[in-house]
Length: 303
Ligand SMILES: [Zn+2]
Ligand SMILES: [Zn+2]
Image (cartoon, rainbow, N blue to C red; front, side, top):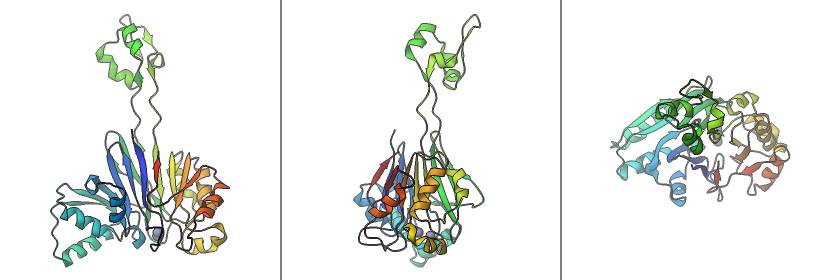
């Protein structure tokens, strides 16, 4: 099953010739989640051939402009293209006021509903749940209230071994329980251990998104063992003091968090506009965490 992240923008603060500010689409089992929606998001969705109308859930990490200034345009375009189904937006409660002021000022009445969901900043909270996917928020440490997001596959059922179904003539009424991990009970009451008749499902995958944050090891417990971690690395490590002042992280700090959290792969992004060449940031992060990749606009990461 496909689980991939498309980077629409990986810059910070202001757009540059190479980079849009933060936005990305996570596609998992046919669901499309938009994370942050900076300026340029609509153009980037078009360039990357992602159908806007497939996006039903938008997660906004915080209310700095480089993470949401594209949202009103995105909402408006969906209306103009005839959207009817509701759009869910998960954000700080102030965003609703901002968007409604913009819509009311232009006398715009959307033909679809926006369902607003308010983020909490006091721990891990479940935002979305269906039969195969869960999305959680968790707090980050930035200048204003900020959340990261965790997109997690649910554990699948165990797989029955076909030859064992025939060998033991497994009755239909036991199959669901066996897929959940129960042993098979033969007619005479003899149990057959579950691991003799099933194989384990593929391990579940998890994507962790840490947008703007100062270096803070408190985040580690939320993102532990993630398959892929996106963590901001706004600065090279020689600008550590600047990172602290602005509540951002350096390459070395992002890589240290990846190491502490035991993630499989790290993607860095949210680069300061001062870096036209981001390769040195990648190289520096890899000195601490070898399996690091660098976000670039339009780049896709398979999970
Ligand atoms: Zn930012
Ligand atoms: Zn910020």
